[in-house]
Image 1 (cartoon, rainbow, N blue to C red):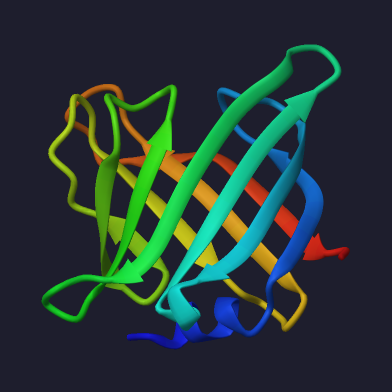
Image 2: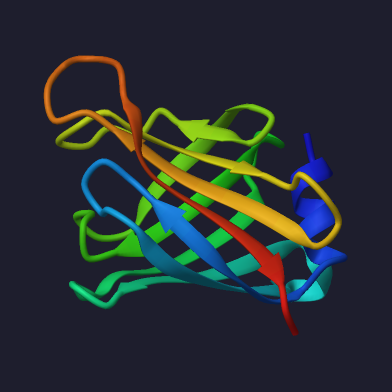
Length: 140
Protein backbone atom coordinates (compact mmCIF):
# COMPACT_ATOMS: atom_id res chain seq x y z
CA UNK A 1 0.00 0.00 0.00
CA UNK A 2 2.93 2.36 0.52
CA UNK A 3 4.29 1.98 -3.03
CA UNK A 4 2.89 5.34 -4.18
CA UNK A 5 4.28 7.19 -1.15
CA UNK A 6 7.68 5.52 -1.47
CA UNK A 7 7.93 6.19 -5.20
CA UNK A 8 7.03 9.88 -4.82
CA UNK A 9 9.46 10.26 -1.92
CA UNK A 10 12.23 9.00 -4.20
CA UNK A 11 11.20 11.29 -7.10
CA UNK A 12 10.85 14.81 -5.71
CA UNK A 13 10.88 17.86 -7.94
CA UNK A 14 8.85 19.95 -10.31
CA UNK A 15 6.56 18.13 -12.75
CA UNK A 16 5.08 19.92 -15.76
CA UNK A 17 2.75 18.85 -18.52
CA UNK A 18 -0.69 19.10 -20.00
CA UNK A 19 -4.15 18.24 -18.86
CA UNK A 20 -7.69 18.18 -20.12
CA UNK A 21 -11.15 17.61 -18.77
CA UNK A 22 -14.89 17.87 -19.24
CA UNK A 23 -15.20 21.01 -17.13
CA UNK A 24 -11.70 22.45 -17.36
CA UNK A 25 -10.90 22.01 -21.04
CA UNK A 26 -7.21 21.89 -22.02
CA UNK A 27 -4.73 23.29 -19.48
CA UNK A 28 -1.07 23.42 -18.50
CA UNK A 29 -0.32 21.59 -15.24
CA UNK A 30 2.44 22.11 -12.71
CA UNK A 31 2.90 19.81 -9.69
CA UNK A 32 5.68 20.32 -7.15
CA UNK A 33 6.44 17.09 -5.24
CA UNK A 34 8.17 17.62 -1.88
CA UNK A 35 8.90 14.83 0.64
CA UNK A 36 8.55 15.95 4.26
CA UNK A 37 9.07 14.46 7.73
CA UNK A 38 11.89 12.17 6.56
CA UNK A 39 9.74 10.68 3.80
CA UNK A 40 6.72 9.91 5.94
CA UNK A 41 4.64 12.28 3.85
CA UNK A 42 4.74 14.03 0.49
CA UNK A 43 3.36 17.48 -0.31
CA UNK A 44 1.84 17.97 -3.77
CA UNK A 45 1.35 21.58 -4.84
CA UNK A 46 -0.76 21.50 -8.00
CA UNK A 47 -1.69 24.37 -10.32
CA UNK A 48 -3.65 24.30 -13.57
CA UNK A 49 -3.52 27.23 -16.01
CA UNK A 50 -4.94 27.97 -19.44
CA UNK A 51 -4.66 30.97 -21.76
CA UNK A 52 -8.44 31.33 -21.94
CA UNK A 53 -9.22 30.94 -18.20
CA UNK A 54 -5.96 31.92 -16.48
CA UNK A 55 -5.25 30.16 -13.19
CA UNK A 56 -8.02 27.53 -12.94
CA UNK A 57 -7.01 25.38 -10.00
CA UNK A 58 -4.71 25.70 -7.01
CA UNK A 59 -4.33 22.74 -4.68
CA UNK A 60 -2.16 21.90 -1.68
CA UNK A 61 -2.26 18.21 -0.82
CA UNK A 62 -0.46 16.02 1.71
CA UNK A 63 -0.07 12.29 1.00
CA UNK A 64 0.64 10.23 4.09
CA UNK A 65 -0.20 6.97 5.85
CA UNK A 66 -3.13 7.27 8.24
CA UNK A 67 -3.53 5.73 11.68
CA UNK A 68 -4.97 2.54 10.18
CA UNK A 69 -2.04 2.16 7.79
CA UNK A 70 -3.88 3.13 4.60
CA UNK A 71 -2.67 6.02 2.50
CA UNK A 72 -4.60 9.27 2.74
CA UNK A 73 -4.71 12.51 0.78
CA UNK A 74 -5.45 15.67 2.76
CA UNK A 75 -6.58 18.14 0.11
CA UNK A 76 -7.04 21.91 0.34
CA UNK A 77 -8.35 23.78 -2.71
CA UNK A 78 -11.00 26.40 -3.44
CA UNK A 79 -13.44 23.85 -4.85
CA UNK A 80 -13.71 21.97 -1.53
CA UNK A 81 -15.15 23.06 1.83
CA UNK A 82 -11.85 23.26 3.76
CA UNK A 83 -9.32 20.44 4.04
CA UNK A 84 -10.86 17.17 2.90
CA UNK A 85 -9.47 13.67 3.54
CA UNK A 86 -9.53 11.09 0.74
CA UNK A 87 -8.72 7.46 1.67
CA UNK A 88 -6.94 5.05 -0.67
CA UNK A 89 -9.46 2.33 -1.55
CA UNK A 90 -7.26 0.67 -4.21
CA UNK A 91 -3.68 1.45 -5.21
CA UNK A 92 -3.72 5.04 -6.51
CA UNK A 93 -7.50 5.50 -6.08
CA UNK A 94 -8.56 7.84 -3.28
CA UNK A 95 -12.21 8.34 -2.38
CA UNK A 96 -14.78 7.94 0.38
CA UNK A 97 -15.07 11.45 1.64
CA UNK A 98 -18.39 12.73 2.93
CA UNK A 99 -18.96 15.93 1.01
CA UNK A 100 -21.60 17.71 -1.04
CA UNK A 101 -20.85 15.58 -4.12
CA UNK A 102 -19.21 12.18 -4.66
CA UNK A 103 -15.55 12.62 -5.59
CA UNK A 104 -12.31 10.71 -5.94
CA UNK A 105 -8.72 11.33 -7.02
CA UNK A 106 -6.73 8.90 -9.16
CA UNK A 107 -2.94 9.11 -9.09
CA UNK A 108 -0.50 6.92 -11.02
CA UNK A 109 3.23 6.86 -11.64
CA UNK A 110 3.54 5.32 -15.12
CA UNK A 111 7.34 5.74 -15.11
CA UNK A 112 10.08 7.03 -12.84
CA UNK A 113 9.79 10.61 -14.12
CA UNK A 114 6.05 10.91 -14.80
CA UNK A 115 2.84 11.29 -12.84
CA UNK A 116 -0.86 11.41 -13.66
CA UNK A 117 -3.33 13.13 -11.38
CA UNK A 118 -7.06 12.97 -12.07
CA UNK A 119 -10.11 14.44 -10.40
CA UNK A 120 -13.38 12.50 -10.65
CA UNK A 121 -16.73 13.73 -9.38
CA UNK A 122 -20.45 13.83 -9.98
CA UNK A 123 -22.85 16.67 -9.25
CA UNK A 124 -25.68 14.22 -8.58
CA UNK A 125 -25.90 10.79 -6.97
CA UNK A 126 -24.31 9.10 -10.00
CA UNK A 127 -20.93 7.42 -9.84
CA UNK A 128 -18.07 9.94 -10.18
CA UNK A 129 -16.53 10.26 -13.64
CA UNK A 130 -13.29 11.83 -14.77
CA UNK A 131 -13.55 15.61 -14.91
CA UNK A 132 -9.88 16.53 -15.32
CA UNK A 133 -6.56 14.74 -15.62
CA UNK A 134 -3.02 16.09 -15.69
CA UNK A 135 -0.17 14.11 -17.24
CA UNK A 136 3.13 15.57 -16.08
CA UNK A 137 6.86 14.77 -16.30
CA UNK A 138 9.60 15.74 -13.87
CA UNK A 139 11.53 18.74 -15.21
CA UNK A 140 13.61 19.80 -12.22
